[in-house]
Image 1 (spheres, rainbow, N blue to C red):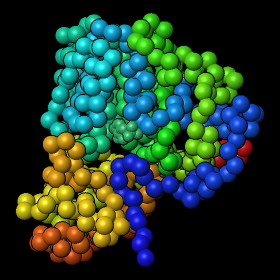
Image 2 (image 1 turned 135 degrees about the horizontal axis):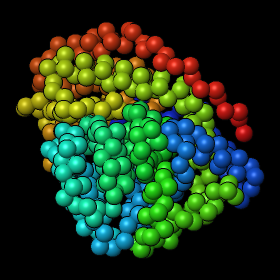
Image 3 (image 1 turned 30 degrees about the vertical axis):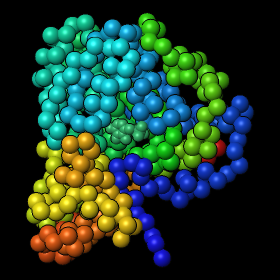
Image 4 (image 1 turned 90 degrees about the horizontal axis):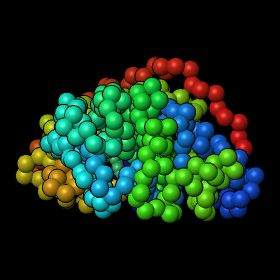
Length: 392
Ligand SMILES: *Cc1c(COP(=O)(O)O)cnc(C)c1O
């Protein structure tokens, strides 16, 4: 018998009520039946993005939404600032360079958040910059950035703020309108508890001005076409209809729990995970750790790649390793989306057992016990959950 556990920072586990919707007969996308799902998903996403801005549905994974942001906001030769301290920040640089932008990279060491005062300096030194690109949570290192502060800086400048919230959305607060974030991109397969393949972007009026002026080539990913088809309750091209239908269910569950309660749950699971790994004598890699995943330094003398491989093959537990130069040096435990306290216990227990097998000296159960002490106390509901949307 082989049971598997998905503890990776994307894709993430999916509630059975959500995955079962994928098995329903496929709808035609130019029908009122699909239109009702489309409207429900857009409205649900506006709740999750905390915005009244346009939200566009994009067929593709999160990177597709990132690329669409670059294609729609800039022209060849434009200057863009990228706040980066990890693999996904670096991905912004690569996409921008692909489209002929001049990139000013504001870097921080991997494991640190990008310092807002460095962004401030870059904005002053580069008044021609059209946009600042960044991550809410840098998934390669487990760090959270100070998006609220970044937004204050861009609001006072000529540049717009574009945030990759692909792993952070739903688990880590990003108050798009209150903070003044212009563009937020996300994907279905992380906090949104849906299968991979659907991405989305919220676009402010300030950003639409750039979209209208941008000269980068785009056809399939043209945000103007997407915006135009919203009143008709459809997408310009065939969307992944099954994902839209299943995401409607995921969004119902998110609304029923309530965003503030979801943030509190993620903070709680993160706190327990950190307490567990720390109790084992392990070091947390991120200096400003986010609430959707925990990155852990592989202890000296242990083969980091073996941890990942053995855990998957022998225990059926999938976690993530390090990327780029962190390969073999860290491992990453997700606590995002459809996760509850026993997902944390499974992850910590598997870590203890594997490290024990690989010769690291630890007391079995010590990490689990530290987490349990936190997990005994469920966070109090912060607010009354929002009313559940009526089913379509
Ligand atoms: C997962 C992730 C991406 C890439 O998303 P894909 O869906 O794999 O294209 C981009 N940025 C961040 C921060 C992510 O966590």
